[in-house]
Length: 629
Image (cartoon, rainbow, N blue to C red; front, side):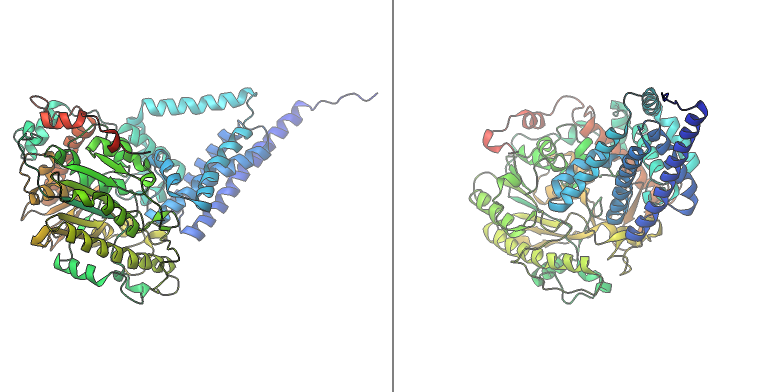
């Protein structure tokens, strides 16, 4: 009778050792293949100096996962799915926006699902679902060592959460850090360390809300002697004329892309003429290629955004007297129109907190003229005019805020909008964008003519929210010498190019106003001035002043322009007098912004709550004016 033969202890050890060797060899082989593919497809890879460190980091992740796995086959599938999803997501972001994955991207990822459709939506869903399912399937839940490894991971995360600052300082000392050059950080670290280092930094920089004394000191530095004056609202303030703000998705001048050899100028000649009358003015955005909500925050609230995360998502926690609420206290009704999903970038909550009366989103529009997932501007403008037309001459002035959606990457057109502009071979994305601008600029001018006919005294401002994304590593711009492939190689002028979009301001019958380069956070204060609204407001802190240079902060740096020269302040060690003064001003604005939008609002109620602001903030909206979700 055959007896059951049990493996000897030596055989068990041998099998286990071979399993670990196989697992680590698999991770190393995957790593080499993945970096080669990402470099080939997207020109994205860690730098030579980071190769060994990045490989070790991947092997550590592989060891933790193998220690929890039930078999080498399941480990290979689960690990490959997880690491591929992260590596591909990082490559896509770097190729489109120029920067690597950041911890905040995982929080904001839900918004991407609202933006995509068809195969892109399916692909994004699979990138999330497949790794999660395979990892769950991979883990040997009944084995003690799985729980030990999970405990090690949980302990490590707990220590990082508990002691983020010393960890962040130690990692910076070991691997370095450049706030303004995140691509350089990735190339010096690799993806696992990039996410670890920036995740710890994000935790470490959670500053306490400013104290009363810190707010007063910041206000004094900005020249505001009495904090309570910032939002005092005169109850007898008389309503004024209508304000129309048109934010144009990815609107820019494609004729600057001379390497693309466009067959014709995409922009409507009427727009060219109007823009020339404005002195070819530019708005300076806080973002490139995306994150429109940060531009929105600046143009509606008057404070700069200096970080990569979306301010609407986590920074705007309080109700605040931004432009819609400030105007409401003078009798205005405000309408926000954007034919995207209502909750994208947390707009439902953000718009409510800054005082919009009505928010019309995709569910409120007749989606009758679609370019794939994007409602045409022509349809959006028509429907907005149909709704607001009767109110333009009524007793109540209107703040009409229109955020277009057509013009977003990948720049699709429907059958009613055939291709009319051709570009050089290999410049297909630029060609698609140029044709989008052909129709977008003409639909804009048709709307503008009708709007000015109906409301000749209205104050109208229109601008692009950010530059378009045109290819890997600033492709499109790079070939024409406008931008370099990496921010580390940017000249001072390139930083301005990165964020400058056409800006036109029409002061009713007085005509076009020449604003010059205007950082977007300075726009609300200028609009109040043109409306004749001299009431104190927090937005007057950042209103442009004649003769003073403009300051455009970007993550980890800022630049200063006076219309002739440009000074870039990239390093805290820069002791240029202009950099020291501008840095001090931005620091003070940062304190006030943290206080107003996420703190105790000392700046708004030094003595007592301001009646106009508090009444407007707490009044319930009529059912007809509540956003429809």
